[in-house]
Length: 149
Image: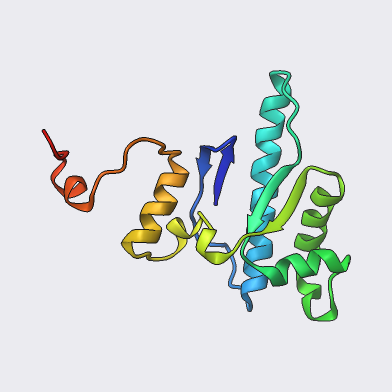
């Protein structure tokens, strides 16, 4: 999970979940709950210095987890996730978070959860580090010497 404010990364978390999930939707819902908890801390910190934040946009590449939230209640197949579901739903209902879909290729958190080839790794790394400077070639990155030096 990567938390950014106005394009700048302020926190990055990657760890195993405490329990094994039977589906990717369950895993994503649990990750969304971690995002809710992290954003609560960030919102509280900013409130203490007098800054009010807009609802936090939480991106997920799981359409199934978003469909669960849109449904308005857990289904019989997801009853075991009721506590997680209702806590995430409460954050959405209270206007604290807005949950939206992002295509998997644009999911910046992939850098911390799976092996990536060089092109997506570089894209996500640069987004996470808010790297707007000149891009080095692969050879320049390996040698540490820029062309023309």
